[in-house]
Image 1 (tube, rainbow, N blue to C red):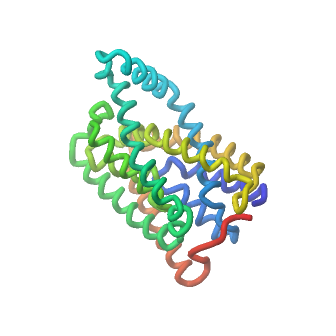
Image 2: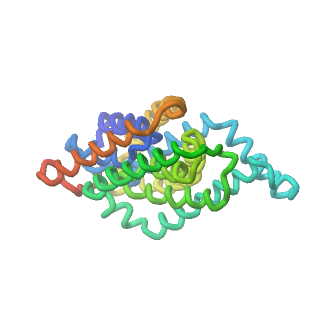
Length: 280
């Protein structure tokens, strides 16, 4: 992987990680359109450390309150009803599905699920699910994040696990689940970002050991991409949360469906290959 490719893919990662359009799909698709090799699951996971660092900084006060309250509640049972302490347990419960499924199907996730035909289908299907969930939420009273329950936290977690398939989108899947459960757009997005922290950090740290080894890209380009993903990702978080406070997800749905159709056409006509080798 060249430095230019790394810079471009880092920008793509930062721009798309927090939008409900699937960053892993965009890295895979953009590489195919540019005639580059698939950057691979390791590169994707490590660059997500950059965007997740942006989450840690942007939500630093929320995270500090949650960690502190959860830790205190472990030794002081009377504090277990503290909303922040409960949120700590909700994040843990919501992380279990992706941890279990990710470990069980790691080889499949890193190989056959990166087929662009699957990516195109996921973009279209889950785009329509996002649209339906947003429309359904619009006719009910939107619940704040303080109304979150353990079963709902687990449902969010299973939705996040679906994002192991490129094209689904971590934020798109979890936000769709939140909207379907009746939460406001802001509440669904906020919990989505918090829920992603343990899974993304764990995945990125594990994949760090693969960088520079075998088919994975070298350290230099990967670090460049990760740094750019952090800078752009921080700005994307601020914009996205402000946008959804007054706007629907319809533009993202239209974009997903159109992109899925374009990818399907390009693959069907042989313009781009459905599968590709990893970066050397």
